[in-house]
Amino acid sequence: MNQTELNELELFLKDSFESLKNNNSGKVADYIPYLSKIPSSKFAISLCTIDGKVINIGDTKEQFCLQSCSKPFSYCYARKLLGREKVHSHVGYEPTGVSFNKNVLNKNGLPHNPMVNAGALMINYLIHENELPSDRFNKVKTMFEDISGGTKVGFNTSVFLSEKEHADKNYALAYSMRGAGAYGEPYPSASKLNRMLDLYFQICSIEITSEQGAIMAAMLANGGICPKSGEQYFDTETIRDCVSLMFSCGMYDFSGEFAFDVGLPAKSGVSGSIMLVVPGKFGLCVWSPPLDDIGNSVRGVEICRRLSNTCSGNYHIFRHIGKIEQEHTNIDVAFYSCMDAIVRDDIEKLRAYLNNVDIGRTDYDNRSLLHIACSEGKIEMIKILIEKDATQCHDRWGNTPKDDLNRFISENKDSLTQDKFDELQELF
Image (cartoon, rainbow, N blue to C red; front, side, top):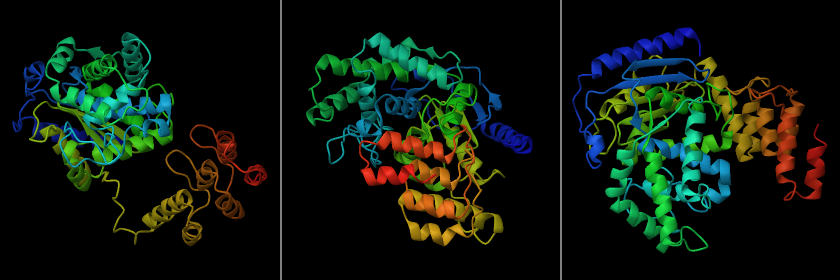
């Protein structure tokens, strides 16, 4: 991001902060006694770009509990440990259409998605499930410190104990999932479910600042690379799936309206925090304790609305719809249509758009169409792109398309036929 855009963002956020700081709408969460004591005037906005530049406005040094804002990162961590197939054999990826703590499962007897309580409990069940409770929590805590740039996170014992004391619905969810067979075999004991619940309450009670939250959100915007450390902590497929779930399920049963109005992935928590992801640009964290009737920060939601609808950056992810008559947008549409065609194995669509694309064009990760085709192992697509003189450029991590193809072959060699294996080997 260039300095001019960053300066405009800082001015926009400062103006929004000043105009909203006296907005007293909403009510601080009181089902956890400790949270009810947080002054409603607290208000912090932090932004972190994917190259590590930070904007801080307001009470950005004060810590608050992660609560449900922990869920996207716990999901990514489970994916890192266990992989996509294992995780989603225990939890779905559809919106529920009901309250986040409702005792409902999908048609397969699984939690609907990882962003609601049932799904987050299942994710916590899967994380280091056979290790000692202290080791499990310490490893998750270290993960949060790593993705926030190596900074220390806190822990609020009072919130943890309050969570345990007022957790009837979460206990009911845990046992309902056992009754539905969602945990799989072996049948988990009551003590194992209690350890899962304790880990869930502990993670919700981790404390961060808004700056740490912005760094975490920027890590998601940056394809899994922490903008402060430069470490690739989660792979891009995991991040893609995570932000997709945030877009459809991250704002409780306000998620549909938020996606419609704001058009960006986000996650909220009852401590008053919202983490917003602008892919390829930055992460935003707003902390303001007063909540609306659904449980989202009143000031936080309004900041997100303004960012999408009135900020000159125009960050809504579907911002180009209706503007394809502009030359630069025609190129954008053609390029991303080709990417979509490759993923969907739609050769006709690829041919239809390819003539309008600079074959050397790359996305924000410096990945070309040939990178995508090779990472997917799409033989005919690769041949078409090579015929168009697609080059062996390097992406952000230094990988060429041939590197991606070799990785695909290595990861899929057991399922490839000998003919396809040989054909892939002979492409370059």
